[in-house]
Image 1 (cartoon, rainbow, N blue to C red):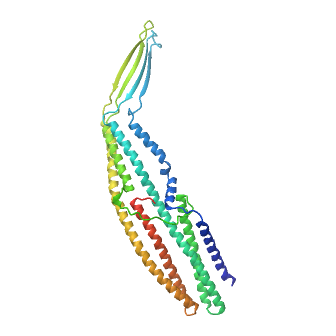
Image 2: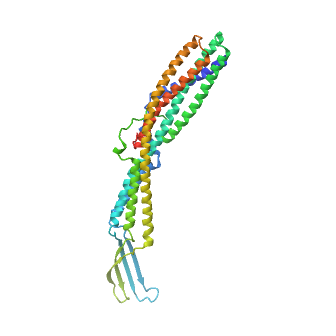
Length: 407
């Protein structure tokens, strides 16, 4: 009979290890879902490069507000007859060329820089919200898997205790050998379920850890944010609206900048016609005005116009999609409350039935198969209730995510 006790000892040791692990965790500070999102954001390329992007936007605004559209240039030239006639003819010229803003180009460049800077801010929020959605999904998947594992641990322990009781009664002659076989089969099934649940819980926790860098799950989720979608700007739509504004600014800049910037140049010329003459100095002014060309500007305008049309279409489509997601998430939350209420009633009924059947089995008034069936029904009802309670928290996270709120 030693072989009958070994599974019980194994399950008891596993249960003790799990309980010891939970006891040790309870003394440490537990992370929060908000902290998990922040930790995940610090690992994202967008979060890492945010400071550099902000510096880039500052540089763009400074360039658009500068005195010239491009840096001035300096030219030096020398003319001599030393290598042919060598009569002493010399000419040295130094010139500085400054590009100029044409009417409307500076203001359009400044509007574009401001739109790009605003887009960076709202896109940063939208990117962080997207990461929050991934963290929320990973967190709740891990919570569901951990819940299944916790119940599987208890189920395995209960099956082992029942098997011990049946084994004792078989020895005493109160039960048949077939009852022991059923009890052993139920215990093996419980252990198999426990191993599978442990594997799924470990996998879900690894995904959460990979995303956030946290080795422990937050103990609680988040509260429902009561703000309505109409009372604040949705970050997802704000990013797309910012893209529309940037493309509008680019189209305006392309339309205003129809030619290269004109240039004004000031030069100093020092020259002498021959060795016998002295050097003479003079000042030269010149203006360079590039002409507009259809081949130069048409591609820029058409590209900017196509990007604008695409961004406007994406904004309209996203607005309908996001509001549909909000309505769906709210409906799912209402359904989750109803399902939890029904799961509570089912759990109470199956628990009452299981207690009565267990008492009848101890008194010898009921066979083992009926008791095992009642045990399974109560376990499934408890599993459904615990998952229904977690599903409410998951639905709350989906509503907050759809509304654009971070934990």
